[in-house]
Image (tube, rainbow, N blue to C red; front, side, top):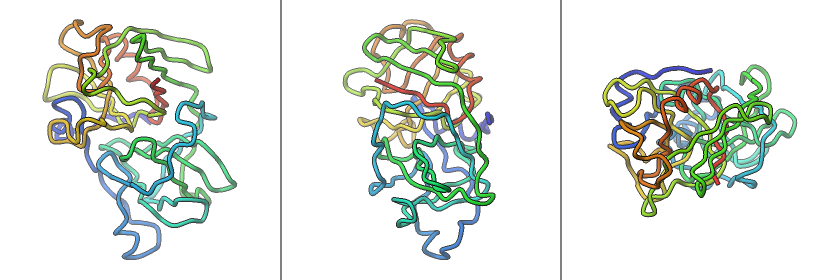
Length: 252
């Protein structure tokens, strides 16, 4: 479930975190109508997507990977609003499920606006399903990040967060990719999240994707001094980089 992106993708993550639209598979049915739908990636915007009804609630742990490009709907059997590709920033797409109704799954989208959701039909061989036992909690007030497995804490660290002018957005985000650093030296790996900055439309040419990464020194620890990303120590990043894609990062 974890894949490293190509170096070219990294150039879009320079200032803090960015992204890549990735490669699209052929859309399911719908012909020309399907191709006009926005792509559900970190570059996408789906303004009419349903909002996350419980932005800090726990999930059942199910994550899905589309085996082909799927249409995303605004309700069970509803109007198509987006296309979910098989890749996100050159990593395989894995999205968390927040609700199930038969073959239909309501998923969290990696697009703007933050907290966007949609429904996909998972019948047949449309998706691969997996159970994710991990959860990341980030408490902005205490600058605390913890990793839980099956509800038990397996790691805890003090982190850096967004400054008041560009705060780290809160809500039920998730890890969408793992990118090996080859361009800059501030972090060996960057973990882009599904959320975006509410203050910056772009980071270094990318779409303003918020992410988790290290910094050249530990001056950030316990401080609000980033452009919105979550800065972590090297040992924290080592642990976070082992988590499956689609892992919820609950930011409060």
